[in-house]
Image 1 (cartoon, rainbow, N blue to C red):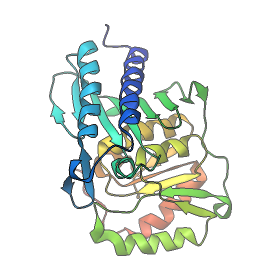
Image 2 (tube, one colour):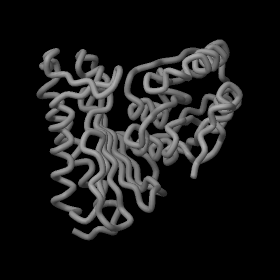
Image 3 (tube, rainbow, N blue to C red):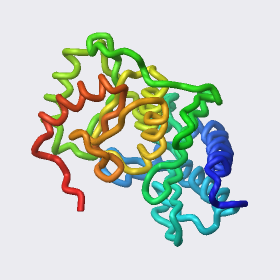
Image 4 (cartoon, rainbow, N blue to C red):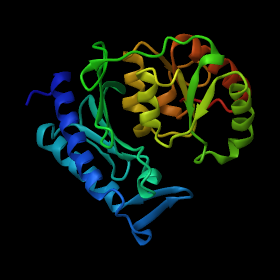
Length: 273
C-alpha cells in the first residue's frame, strides 16, 4: 500500500478502530477488580486496553510497517520517516471498568508532528468521527460543524478534572467557577477524545482541560479544527499537543474560555523548548 495517501491512512484507521471497538463491546461489563492495574494514582489499565492496542498496532504494521507508532500502553515504536501514528486504544478506561457507556478508540496520524488524519470511534453508540486535514470533519460520513452559539449564557461546555495535575486544583476550581457562573452548564464525561468530538459536532460549544497526553487529544483536536473550530493552549498558542493544556470551540467560545483560563493559569504557562 502506498504510504503517501491520507485517504488510505483513514481507511486503515477506521478499520482498526472498528475492530478494537468490537473487542471492547465484547468485554464490556466483564472486568473484575483483580484485573485492574494502577499505572498511577487514579490512572488505571486493564488487559482489555492492552489487547485493544495490540489489535490496532498489528493492523497498522501490516499496512505501514515503516511508520512510527506511539501508543498509550505500549510506548513509542520508533521508525524513520515523517508519519507517526498516535493511539489511545481505550479512552475512558475508568468509565469502561465501571460499565459507564462513554468510552472510545482514538487514532491519529501525524505528519511532521501535526495531525493529518483523525479517527475517534464510540462503539456503544456506533458513532465514527473522522477527519483529514483540509477535507472537513464527519460523523458516520455526514459533515459536522462546531456550535454556532456565541452567547456564553446559552453555551453547554465540556471539561475534565485535573486528575493528573492535582497541584493545579485551586486554579482549576477558580476558573471553573468563573466559567460556570457565565454559562448554561458544564459536563465532565470522562473521555477527552469524545469531549472534543462532541465539540466538533456542536453538542458542546467548547471544551477545556489540562494535564492531557498526546494520545488523548491528537485525533479530537483535528476534528474540531476541520469542523470549523479553534484549538489552542490556555494562552492562545498552538502548543496544546505538547503541553496537554487545551481549549477547543467555535471562535467566540474559544476566546471566552481563553480570557478566563489565561488569567487563572498565568503563572503555569509551560516553557516549550
